[in-house]
Image 1 (tube, rainbow, N blue to C red):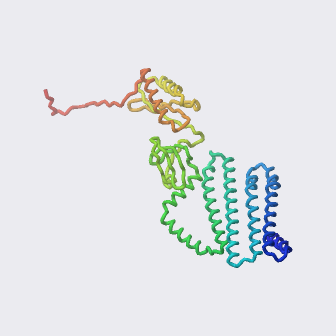
Image 2 (image 1 turned 180 degrees about the horizontal axis):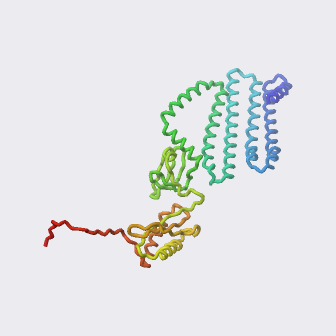
Image 3 (image 1 turned 45 degrees about the vertical axis):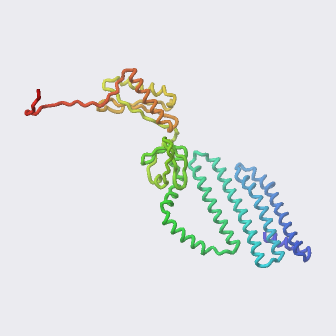
Length: 361
């Protein structure tokens, strides 16, 4: 590029002592070179990279030709500024402005390129992957870093010494870290949750404190969940990161198993109880046929034989409603078939009476 600049200046010098004509020719020369570079990128390079199986290089080449052309134009203007022999102050302001424009043009390119790469990666890995929840966080962090670098280079373009500013920012950051340690703990926990993905948006979770609801938003500082009473709970990520979370939608399948516990009187026909409970499960349209419902004889209780009906449902959100329907069906079928559901009873045996007890007439 430096040799090209010098060559343009030499060619412009042939035109004579008119500095304005020289500056115009230098600017037009760089514009022409930029157009040639833009055509090479958009026609030749794009045709070459289109043969690859990946779409990332194609998208990057499409984004590249505009910053290349603008860079040639800005370079031509900078060369023209030197040819015009501005004063030192005017030259400093003009070159600083041109450098600033170039910095933000390339900042826009890198930001769009990074967003394009993340979009293509997100399309390939899908929404179910553990990496999918990390992509928005990565994009946000990358944008902040790129913006900070762009501002840093802008300061350098204007010959501003940022050493003292960086030192002051370090001291201020240290003070803020002590003052906002709880917030920082929540932020780091949010990063850990995004990386580990113990749950995702739409999952039903139960906190260690007992709250249960559907995750509606996962932020860097907190997680929001909507309970079955349509009450939104905001939980700091630091609490979730250090507690036990039950994810009802986790595991290899999205299906959820519910249990219906029931006791029958001693002397009941065990085979009949198993058949009735299986029939109740199969008659419910919301109970999965695969895996099949199961009935288990769990224990000999104090007043009853304790059975448990285990069924699978498609969504954990329907657990309360389907459990209600199964309980109603079990009670109705037991009433129809004469199956007794006992209640706790106690027999009191008096072994002896005190000898001085007076029995009133």
